[in-house]
Image (tube, rainbow, N blue to C red):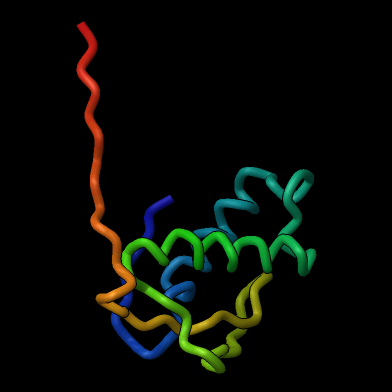
Length: 96
């Protein structure tokens, strides 16, 4: 699954929602994680919030936007808060 970045007042999730829905359909994930169920869609939103937070992206209060996709109906908008960004690091381990 390829993720795209988006710079606009739209929810960041809109850049990926079609890819996510298609991936779930093509790989028959609905038996284990049915996107038609509210709790599972909310879990995806919480995962996005958790993933974006260390990079300084925080949800804008009251910014939820409605849209029409196959399973998802709304998402929050995010803004960059430099003071919330953590230093991104990558650890590389060399084994002999």
